Image 1: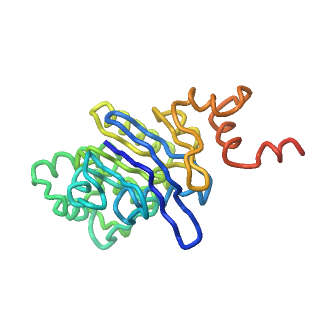
Image 2: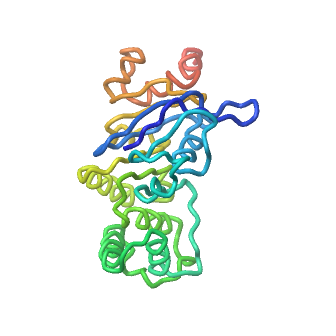
Image 3: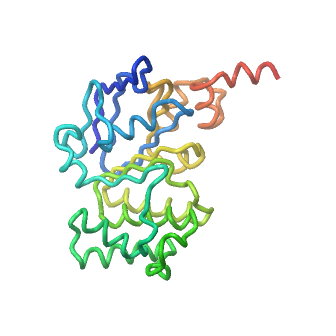
Length: 248
């Protein structure tokens, strides 16, 4: 469903993404891990069409995001790290607005939006002005606006921001359900434990390149056998943690 081939993005002298390739299939949750400045956000912006790669290509469901962005975006949903919501609208007005942008018929909108509002604990707030929502409630509304469309591809950038433990658990359950329905999901997160728990495969990105990718077991082959978990692997591959640890 997602094919990234030899992508490069430069900001003058800085190479933010360097000849990067990866793929994500149907019914897969694919994790992106990397330290700050690794290139994850730039990669995601290229995947969703907010930036064009300087070289390489990105296809979403067979559609090139640069050459055919409309068809690519029709089958994709994106929840950014810091999403913007029109706070003077009610929750239902906002969802209706999003539904109109993607030409969702009224019956599907009513059914799907109500279902996800209920799952995420917002149904009783559907007619409340969004400006009165907490940060966590706004994040749940953003997730609802993505999930209600039944997209074939979902790209989530730090979707756990603002969510309490219950919200995190609800999000996990929804992602597993969508995966079982055939959705391809990319999850960019700094919460290594969550990536370890729910991702089928993970790519560790550092300095714009994939330094390792595969299942948790695959990643252990990239690092020393003494690494106990994904956190150890991540730190070994992306930082000077081992050097610092040896000095303590």
